[in-house]
Length: 108
Length: 120
Image 1 (tube, chains in turn brown, red):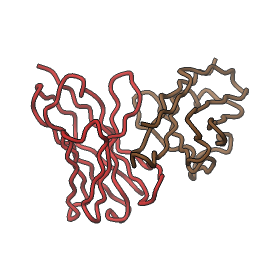
Image 2 (cartoon, one colour):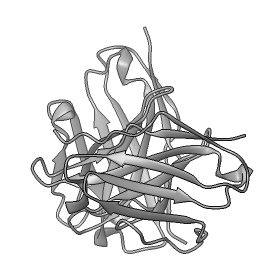
Image 3 (cartoon, one colour):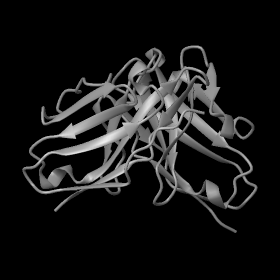
Image 4 (tube, rainbow over the protein chains, first blue to last red):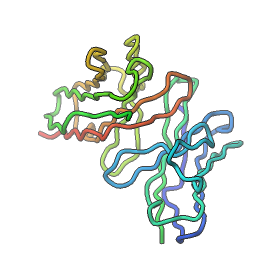
């Protein structure tokens, strides 16, 4: 089955930029979605279709996807961005949805 | 507003079945898939499958193929996920989430989650 690999953790100072990667074989040919999950809460969609943002999601969060890596970028990081982030794709071979391993973002 | 409200926490003994409900409101229930995703304590997200509320058609992850049943009642805009023969490692928070009826679609919004604890 298709595997998505994310770094377990990313640490960033307030005001700086955090980049969260999601690696998968030729992931650039797939459509990637990103979710933010804060402790004790359900996940929230923050980026869909590689780089689109749902209404209410700040422009500081942006996505890109090419080759074997998709990236969620959080600019001007704030304390409220501290959360777990998951990437997700559709695996056309199995017709199943797949989640990445998840990345914990810590704001220093 | 679009909302998914799930049933309350459950405690089950190994070997039993558990059924979780997901009440949808604020949109046309039959126009979107309902997906089920679970999260074991301290672990990541795991997709279990989807149901098409319009047709009742389902697509289950291979891991759960022989133990999960997803159903719906369109008259009360509610989807259900039943997991049979539960074991301790089925202890998790189970989420329902809405998904557009298209290839490669996303999940939005999510229900609040239902904690299922399996313990003897």
